[in-house]
Image (cartoon, rainbow, N blue to C red; front, side):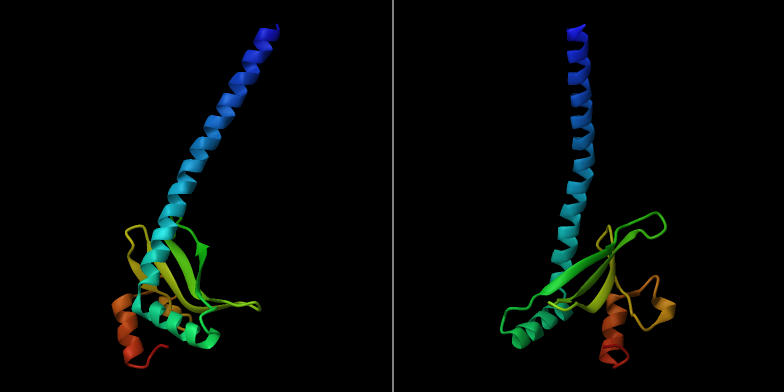
Amino acid sequence: MKKARLFILVSLVFVVRISFAQDAKPMAEDTLFEDSIIAVLSRLPEIEERQLYLDSLTKGKGHISYLIQDTPTKSAPYYEIQVGYNSEIRFEVYYTFHVYKNLKIRYLDPYDNSDSDRGITLEEWRKRRANGELK
């Protein structure tokens, strides 16, 4: 009887450990992909420019921060990432992007309701900024 209980207990522990290991693997993959997204975004000239601006204001103490607002779902197959400055008082959003699994990036204009769900391409964003339509 003791052997049967011991066997059941060991089996239960084994099953629980396997299920945790399986849950941890997708989370680790997601974290690696999120790190890749941040690396790609941080190399955008606009974000590098903002970092230089922050450096000048904070004497090198302030840094760009990335806030993952949403992760992909079936109806919204992208990460929504806010890029900004995380001060002691609040998170100041500079830009919001949708980033897809293929690392396609779309900018979300917070003042343009027609583009609010799908965003615009980086090229269109840069064109609008150059024309003074966007900040």
